[in-house]
Length: 295
Length: 326
Image (cartoon, rainbow over all chains, first blue to last red; front, top):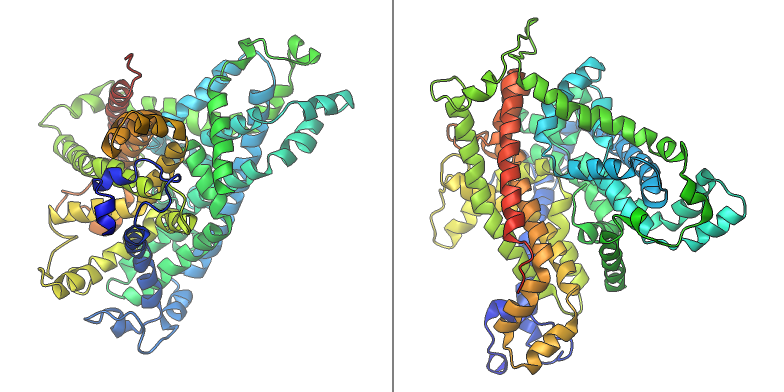
């Protein structure tokens, strides 16, 4: 009976927002679809978590179980003690690299975005155009020369290699400049009348007003660095200098069918970002939908 | 509260587009700005520009120089070879020809399969989400969740779930009476289904969130007007939603093509290029050539060729989505 009142074709059914007719469509059907989709996204993550607490044999048991019959922390104990796969070290490497990189991205991008949003000077257009143009440069053309540059700087196989070279965020400058442009000028002009210089205006007016944008950029930069895979795979080679993503690759090759161990590593690599996501979900989603550009 | 934020932020993005050349616009300015700012802007930009020049601009140029040399990292001599590294990629008897084009083909297959899915499915999800109902933000958050995980976690997890013998996917297919021994990771075309499917699972939420923001920007009055004109749901989708989404569609198409063409982690961790080198993608091959085998001249030339292909594609997308006078 519900379908009889709304015989619209499925994809178009929701094309028009139905806020004016809240009672017109059967909500149960919509919720069934929504919940089905949610299960599709969440159940693999749940299974990863469950598997990490299984025994070695139960992890590969047929048929698979959703509740460990004999829950154990054995997998975690094993990887934390292994010297060829020091997951604990990787965790701290990732934490240091992602935090330092996020701090650098936010600081340098905010400083650069301020004059690009608020000052007139020769060369401004060229600087801005060059920065925006690099948003469209595929990162692949940078990896070979950057490997050599990082090698000359003696940074290969050190965390510096994954902190500094990726800190020049064109997205960050673009994103913060857009935000600064949207701020009202009155406060800055009042500060100027009070005798504040450019630096004081930036620090005491712009930065406090821009906290949401700065936090968004920091979170996005942290996530990007935490998850970065291609670059660290090639510039961090010894086990103790790796971050979690290349570490997971090492862990996978070292433990071919020990899925309890591999899933434990994956849980350790995902827990911090999932926690960050739960806390800063609004910033992350707003940041993505605002400009849609990846950091 | 989230929606009001979206509205505010999108209007900020809108106004910014016409502020790009604000210096030339007679905007109200305070007196000091007219005379220029001296050194101040450059001091503010110095830390960023230092990084930007060293790790973005310099390597982009340095890479060209590398590509013009027989640049083997492990050898002392790196002789100038002109365009030889590029010519090799078009000479079917050269050592890199078949491997390179095989990798380009793999990237092409992956892109052709994943882009349509990543354009259409997230749009459908966004359309379902585009109205107020209890729990909407929760669902949006759940769908987006895989995207905050890195490719390493996603690929390692799905290699487990897609395992031929003990994987959850084959187990459940078997339980449904379907074949339970599909070689998802060791055979083509199954491996393509696996790589594309996992990528859709991973990044669907990203595109859906962008679409949703775009949908919320379309004024409700337009739908109202269409309804008054007697448009049915399909017609209002075709004549209101799609035109309203045009800039967002162009952006999502572009970002998705570029992301797909850069695919690396999924085949690197899930198939290792298996069964032979069929799923070894362009980035995978370029990175291995340059940074594993240290044939950096070859790899640099390949990366520029790939970039040129991508630029042509981008121009095509811009042209496809250009504003047509009606």
